[in-house]
Length: 528
Image (tube, rainbow, N blue to C red):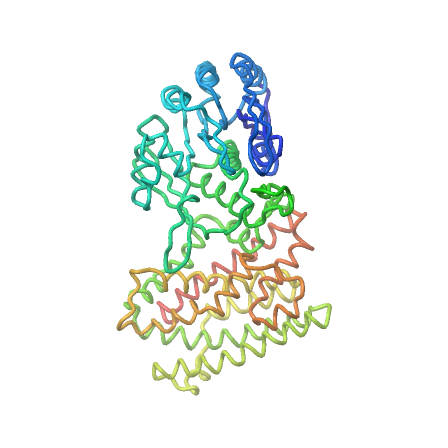
């Protein structure tokens, strides 16, 4: 086999004449993920967004011939199997894969039985063949809840809870697959008055579960979701991701594709958007703020958001002396943060950008007054705060931010300021929602609530790109002064999206600022 730099996935599936599912969806998905797709067509369907009105099976021996042709020459790093509509095709595929054990190590099977529009795609007598012949050679099985019930010979509607999903995933693994990703899209769960989709990953190799939660998206345009997920999963496995990471990446891909579904294609269940990653940027279509967090060396972000200082706030065991010292230093930090915002105004090239930075300064001035009021709850007077000697940790951090703003451009400055906003947002929400966090009698509960508050979280979410993309910066800042991270998305689009080296430079700035945030916690513990 010749050396290659690009991962390869072979997809064995039916053709969708409407282009939203089947082999067409697989190729689009894999291509958008920078994976080379080879295709073995098992059936040709006549379908559109309203339904399937015809299925023509390719002769089983010719399906086998296609597989042999691909694997004997091009090879494959993973194999995705979708619609196999007859017993004879299933048996031929399973037998052929056994002849290529090395290339069939990572077989991802999407047990396609019913289309999004409700058309049955798998003959009843083929289900036993799928269970007996194909599942024993399967690495990852990706059924939805109705498919799981059919495979396990359960009554329709038997799986109605998260625990039932967990039990079903484990039972499915008993049929042969090493990993089962049981999709929860057909069984949205309500948590804290919010509809969530919970996908359950069961690993039979170590008897472990992993749950992946996402908001439930209300849309009729979900044609091809199962095909897309399994193709994306095979693509991530081919690229070298471990199972947990591959499942998370594939689900995120589909979640974005659903939320950004293509409108006005057909009159029925329209296709999802396979084009969303096609940005060809160094950060592969992710929001920039997410990308810089993902770029951090392993353990750095968790060392920040799960620092002993933070855990002490969560359970109320942090010495009050440490928190008081931190509060005093944090007020001094706010002063330098305002100076950094002033520097950003100086670097602005339009009146809108200058006004936006000015709004930040005004907001920080207001916040500093609230900070003094909060300090008073701990017996700290304004005079004490103003007369506090600045810690060397504080000096190192704030001067680094100002230096990057002085020597670099506006994006450098925003990257140096970003860990503060993003990290505190993550910490606030995490501690607020963690049932282990002490509430009653915890003197730090108000602090936690401050950073879990809706206005602060709105700023964080807009910065990461989960809510909305702002092109009008003036409107952005009028809504919330701390939306400067969303501005960072705009700056990155112009200055980083096509330059890997520039992206790495900005990531290094973000990393150093994150490490300095960690030392800010250490300062509080050491009180020096």
